[in-house]
Each structure stands twice: as structure tokens, then as C-alpha cells.
Image 1 (tube, rainbow, N blue to C red):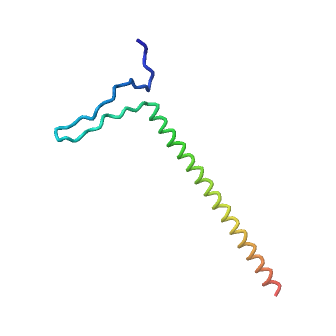
Image 2 (image 1 turned 180 degrees about the horizontal axis):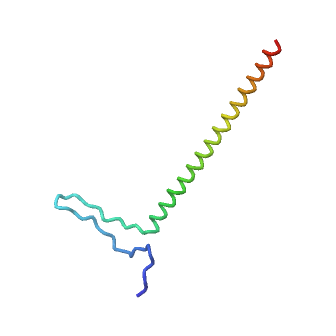
Image 3 (image 1 turned 90 degrees about the horizontal axis):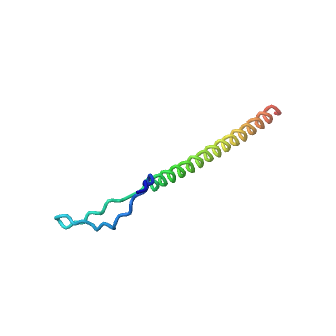
Amino acid sequence: MTARKTGTVAARPAARPVRTHHGARTLPPTIRSTAMLLLNEELARARTREREAEAVNARLALTVLSARRRQRRARQVARRARVSNAI
């Protein structure tokens, strides 16, 4: 007899839905391996990293936009000061 690998599930015959005394069917239990659960978790982590990277880029774009706006206003103020001093 060989040792089973961690995270594997032995094959079982297909379970038929069980009928309760009211006639409603209950579904057979779901069998998921550890590998499947870890795969889903890794996918969720990857999506989270992507969203975080997008948020960083969005914040950087807003920072650049704000700096350009402040620079433009500073040029306008300087130009107005030169015009008012020239009069």
C-alpha cells in the first residue's frame, strides 16, 4: 500500500441525490482538493495585486496632474505680477 499525496482525494463513485421524507432532494457533498483551494486563493491574491497596482498608478497620475496645475497657476501669478509691476 502506497502513501497518499497530501491534497489528493480518492475517487468515489458518483453519489446520487438523497431524497428526504418530504421529497426534496439534498445535493451530494462537494469534494475539493487542497490544491484547488490554494489555486483559488492564489488567483484572488493575483487579482488583489493587480488592483493595488492600478490604484498606485491612479494616485501617481493624480499627483502629476495636481503638480502641473499648481505649476500653471504659479506661472499665471508670476505673469500677473510682472504686468502689474510694469504699469
